[in-house]
Amino acid sequence: MDSHSKIPLPVDQVERIIAAHFTHGVRLTEFEELRDGMFNAAARLELSDGRKMVLKAAPPLDVRVMRYEDNLMRAEVESMRLVRSKTSLPVPDILVYDTTRTLLPSDFFLMSYLPGAPFNKIRAQMSQEDQRVIENQVGRMAREMNQITGPRFGYWSMAQPAGTTWRETFDQMVQGVLQDGLDMHVDLGRPYEQIPGLIRRNLDALDEVDMPRLVHWDLWDGNIFVDLETVQVTGLIDFERVLWGDPISEAFLMLQPAESGFVEGYGEDLLGSPTRRRRRR
Image (cartoon, rainbow, N blue to C red; front, side, top):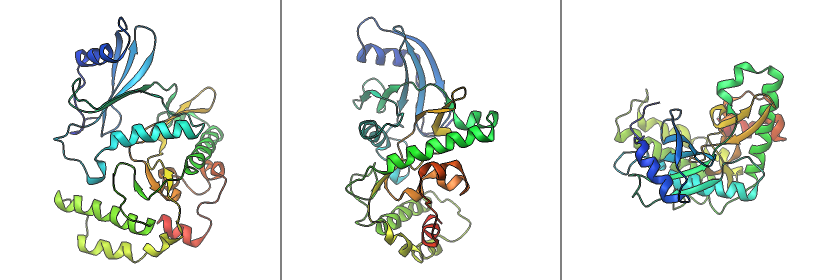
């Protein structure tokens, strides 16, 4: 879909990228712009040697983004490399990461192409049983990812920690979003000054989170690739919003009912206590 943050990807510039980063004689043979997503520009490429890959380009520096959206491409590249090295998850391989801005006006990377289709586009074609199988697999994968622990709480993309505890970090994350809304005159339907009090009234629920764990934070059906025939998850994408925090904040858990296959696959009742349910809210 169209977005002010997406840069154009002219084919001649993409051809120069291939010429600069791959063996002499390899050329671009297929180019397809991928219009899903709202932040980064992306395209599917095929080379003359048969390799398929995806090009992903960040917004240009003069495009205004939210505070936490600075350095999202670096966060995505680094976190995917970490997940590939620490887990068995089907995460694309980073083939090229270019921050020179000489071939495109933005940072970009090339990653290996994932087979399958986004779960949100084929879920309706699947039986309830097969949908649950996929949810179960995603739950197991989320748990494996959450076993990776980090040195601090907060967005991966932010160089400095937002706070020393999850409580402090989450509070500052909320304040950043609210300040972005104030700066851009976004109407939230209630006075801004009321919201911090509503949040802080319940922040003590976060005190039981004492270990920063890797959370994808955008693990919804559109970022899960599935093979319809084998009923297998073939890939997870879009790691740019990854953070060190509380696994209960994962998008899939927020979007799916408690009896979903995700919770079963995770192997732990993430919402099994009143304090955990309060944390999720």
